[in-house]
Amino acid sequence: MPKVTNDLDGYLLFYKKSGVTSFDSLYQVKKALGTGKVGHTGTLDKFAEGLLVLLTGKYTSLVPLFDDLDKTYIGTIHFGVETDTLDPEGNVIRTAPVPTRERIMESLQSFVGIQSQLPPVYSAIHVDGKRAYERVRAGEDVKMEPRTITIHSIEALAFEDNRLTVAVHCSKGTYIRSLARDMGIKTGSCAYLEKLRRIGVGPFSVESAVIAEGGTAGFSAIKNALKPVNMDLFHTMGYPALQLDDSDMATILHGRPLNPLLKGYKLPEGTHLLGLFDKNNTLRALVEKGKYSWSYKHVYPH
Image (cartoon, rainbow, N blue to C red; front, side):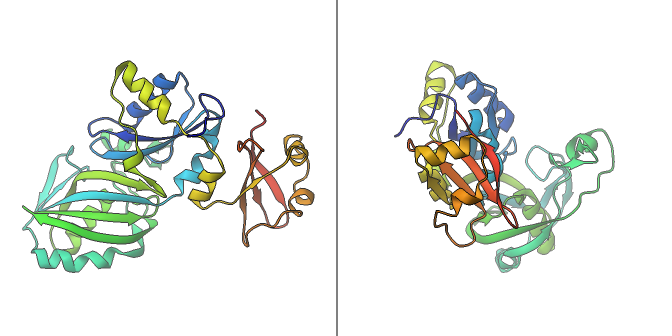
């Protein structure tokens, strides 16, 4: 595996365990790498487990690129019971007869496609400058605004003891807890999300994630799992990339106009975001195309 630009600049596929918050996981990585510059690209609830894609060092500025990627989950939905948090950590607020297996299966495809979804009130979404769950816990009545999300596919994996296990491929911003609630409503019952495992983020698989224990061995595993942000990564994620010679790279690093330079390169049709790499396959700039011209989004001089 190629070396990272320096010991801190790169990305990491990390396995978060159930019962640990995403922020505790970030702290573990920060401690292992000896840096405060670690950014996540989509958290997981405390009860959930699975893949976290983290960015480190100067490349934390790339979080929005990774955050836009689709997610894939395996979740277990418990029918006939609903909790206030829509997960196993909440208090039971409703019970109802369990729908038949046939009714549940018939409802699945109605959730596939572009739709409006109401996020849980127990979520980290900001409402008037404060996180929704903080307002709820303070006794406030919180009204969430629906969001447009896309569920690309739902596949039933098992149904046993009032519990349906599904594989869900969805857009960013999708709450599987909300999906569980809505499936309960759709089937004339109620439900909450009992288990959740994120198995994919865009092209990244949980199978490649590092599972780090505590202590020296765990820290070493995290360091060894850090990967470089290179052209292969950009291509894997579906973003175009160019490798520039020293002369053209000097133009970039001096912040000169991009249009004259990029006119000399054949870019894929419709390119609006572009990674520029030096001869060592190191990302040195991320640029974007506006209505009339290219502009710098991020520059990495060192």
